[in-house]
Image (tube, rainbow, N blue to C red; front, side, top):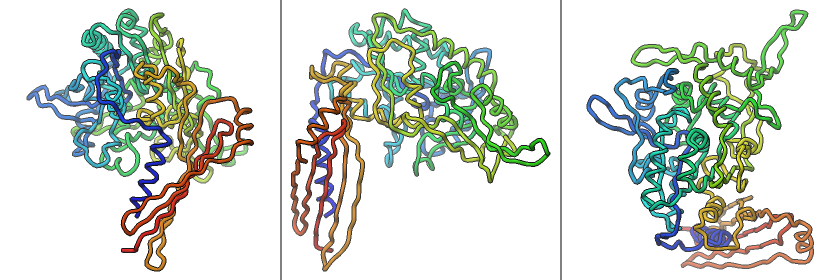
Length: 532
């Protein structure tokens, strides 16, 4: 009975999305694509230099936290700008299988249940192969040690070698680079420091959800509370937030994601705390203190002043690292100087329509912060702005480059990589779409807005009712025309019926006229079956 309703819903969704049957072919005319992930977006293996054994340490299920702490926990070396594992025998490498795609596809290939939570570029790779891209010919990946600085010479040298290899494998065709999140900072850094190589091999660069001016709220809470790679029940199988914190506090890449001090934010990101203070008369009062970007560093220093990590029975100090901050500030200066070479086109896709942490507040009037070293135990509260849930749209849009196009897409920071709206845009920009009338700037998005299901039994029958609603949102700005059409037209109503043995289901689909760029679609369905 429930299956009948699912069939109806799937039929309506297929109709709404205008899904076409994929054509399994290889298009020899496509230019090559190189996919570059963001932080935590590459599989990392640890090689034991004594016996040569190699094992995956990011991402994995069995023994995840233990392997993470013993193989990936690191210390920053200011003389080289490199973060080095505490285990002197462990050397971190990125697998190169499938022309680099293995490292950025599903980050734990062994995970069966809930594998979607560790998908990175997986859906995009699947989609690209449907369009005619071929692994090793026109589709490649570049994974890297995301602990390191975005200007680490070792990483930049590997990227230069990768670009040359892709160019040669594709028969001398220039490359389309697609970056996600921090991968955009890596490529922007490379473009500044190796402009000649970038111009020689790159045709287009498409940045998706890049934190060009930082991710203020997300990074502030990461420094003080840690971070989770996944949400929901799956996080029980992964790294604890504090184990992740103890890694990231020594990672230059994280410091390079801090909010830019010289960017003109619409609202300045703040670190706020409720504190107990004495007034002029010596009376205690609870006040809200606000610290702008530069002053928040002093809070980080004090909050993490006694932070340690126990490695092999020894407590190692792990404070907020001012040497890394100094290094990261230099990286920011390099990134700000980057320019797109004249022969290269740059495109920017950024996430919108989600509450995104901007300022962070700790404590409240009833429970003020009395000891900054206890901040890790406080649950942060956020002042949010529009964005993708991690990167504010304001930051992602401010690339500082000459862009051929900038497009905001409703979507979550990592989930945006499997958004069909994004796929349609990429298909156009990569010239994998042969529809000459498609314009990504005038695309539409289908958003589910309501879902209700009720079941009850009556006289030996099981009755299920379902209501689901969507809004088709376009960027058509001709609202006056929409209003006239809405006044003249009536909703379109269609019915669907399905039967199977002792069960029957019927549904009514109502499509309302477009109004102010939105078109409302309603599905009301009812199924009746004999109660087993």
